[in-house]
Every structure is written in structure tokens, then in C-alpha cells.
Length: 194
Ligand SMILES: Cc1cc2nc3c(=O)[nH]c(=O)nc-3n(C[C@H](O)[C@H](O)[C@H](O)COP(=O)(O)O)c2cc1C
Image (cartoon, rainbow, N blue to C red):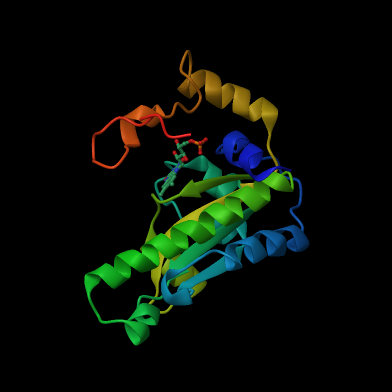
């Protein structure tokens, strides 16, 4: 699949069926995450692959996001803020850089998953406290996001869509003119450059 096509077509999937997701496919997506760029090549990320529903059902204790417990696989995405400190200084900026690194790795994961026919949704609203306890994640490691992974359940999505997204564009994006500028912030693009 062409990279631009994957980027353009990927979308969040929140309706999963129970089909087993092979560990081979999960490893392929993790391999894609592994090759993400990172500041100073410090690679501050780590990922915990969880399949145990008794655990994942407790990741979102108020059940605001049913896809967290419905997904056959849930990847816990973490950063180790101390990784950058070894290379740079201890400023908060380095923590932000680590989050940027993790974001790049997660996006690689999502695109690789899309390419092999798996649906994903990136989830940032959950209980890190519960996840830490259930996955025994050390205190110094930051739990930043989950990725829910599974095969798309089209029928369930129709119901979800009808309920949540009636008459709305599925995932509108801002026009390029709104956030891309030439030379000066706010200056329109397209000044005759070939
Ligand atoms: C940092 C981040 C956090 C997100 N958190 C959630 C979340 O908690 N729950 C959820 O259902 N979707 C979450 N999403 C998915 C976004 O809602 C989704 O990417 C956005 O609406 C665009 O839709 P698309 O992914 O289909 O293009 C998150 C996405 C990002 C990048």
C-alpha cells in the first residue's frame, strides 16, 4: 500500500469483532513503531501488549469508552522520561520531546496496523492508575496512551455511527490554508513557487 494512501485512508475504528489478532501482526506493528524517529535517537517508548479482558475491562473503570474492553488487544504506550535526561538536561522540555517521540511511534503503529487490515483507535482518556497496577508498570514510567486493536465489526459500527455521527462528516480536517503558511506565521501559501 502506498504511504500517502494509508495516511489518507486510515481512520479510527471503535467497533471490533472477536476475531483473534495474531501475535505476528502485533509484532509487525511494533516493528513499525520501533523505526520511528526520536530526539537524539533516545527511543524513550515502551509498549505492553494486553489481551486479558479481565484486565482491560478495568482500564476504563467508568466504561466511557466501550472499545477499550471490546478490543481483542490493547497496547499500553509508555515513555521513560529519564531516557532523555541522560542525554540532555532535566528540563520539562525534554519530557515534551519524549511525548513527541512516542506520538511518532504510535502513528507508525496505527499505519502499519491499517496496512495489515487491523483497526485501531488511539485512546488517551482512561485510568493510568488502574493500568499501572494491573500491568505492574514502575512508578518512573509514564503511561501516556492506549491503542485498541482488532478487526473491524462493520455492523456494530453502523449502529455506533448512526447514534454518534448522524449527518456529520466522519472526520473533517482543517483546510491547509488554515494552518500552513509561507515564510511568516499567518502569511498565505502559494506565492508562485514551482
Ligand atoms: C492523542 C490522542 C488521544 C485520543 N484519545 C481518544 C480517546 O480517548 N478516545 C477515542 O475514542 N478516540 C481518541 N482519539 C482518536 C481521535 O478522536 C481521532 O483520531 C480523531 O477524531 C480523528 O479521527 P480519525 O482517527 O478517524 O482520523 C485520540 C487521538 C489522539 C491523537
